[in-house]
Image (cartoon, rainbow, N blue to C red; front, side, top):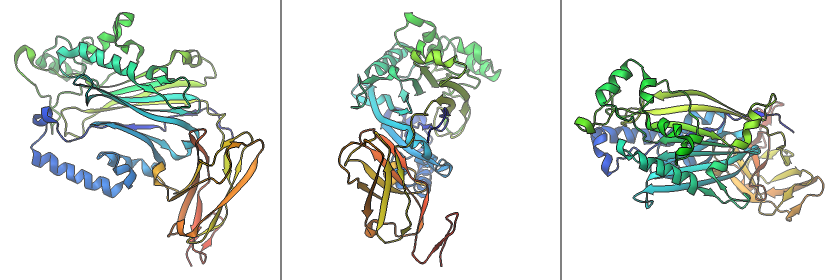
Length: 441
């Protein structure tokens, strides 16, 4: 089955920072008894709402619970101390995603520690390469040169060397690159009281004329950070830093000229590779990026930062990515041997290292399989369409009736190349109606 151009608003990126204070952050949090109590409650909620594979990724994974009922699956994640990227995709889009990789760059203490730096997850959606990078750069208004040096180092040093990527790809080689996080850029030559007054009047553009990130972008070729290649949605919300924890009030740090003024530290930037630009103006585009909903979130209030979110609606042509493996469903019974039957499309490269995995229909991660088996087929190209089958033992079958799916993961293609429709596994004495509703006798 061939699909037309399809949008990619279905990829969800969650980034978070660990709530545990580092040594130089201790005074930024409410009293230990307060935030620790809230954190323990949050952890209990996370464990109750999330499958184990999600909760183990990060203590903030309870946010994933809101996505699970909507048909999302955790594709991949990357963590470097408190800097986290988690990628979710709609379950049916796994067929079009390949070459998923992660990479991290440490910039703290001269590159020795990950308290500052960036972590990334990249993948291909159809023929479109996408990379999401969460950054945490150096603080302080006077350290702008260090920040620009760090972002330049991150853009140049992160290399993805998957064997299927020939040659290896850097961050800027991707069709779409999204960089976000606590970039820590400040406002030049603006005092605390002046900034608070202008924010109260919502005169954000006057303040953004002094924004270090925008000033760096205006340098163009004269700049060395590479930030001039990135775009950002219009900012129509107040600064994201620095707030008194537990409140929505700005909190000054220091006294006199050295006092830190509020600033837009938390940002979302994106870059579209130049080779894609001609397609954007095409009357029938294969590729287009539409930004939307760039906003601030005043809750939660455990940090001196406020979170921001934004959407990028990405349309990409995935018409050439039809399933290479099609499962032929049989009736399966709880606790009894079952037969897995599938057709392999002509020209498909198959291997005995390929895996067929059984999942619950509402699975939330590729790691949540109930059972998996290596395919008992010889490695080689399928010259013509062929039918393959093998048994799964009753001892490996689910012990409870329910709805399940089969997934075929290919080593050669580095992705899922086949996924069955949802089907029931029932007790032999049960009745399955025409619409596959299970009726226990």
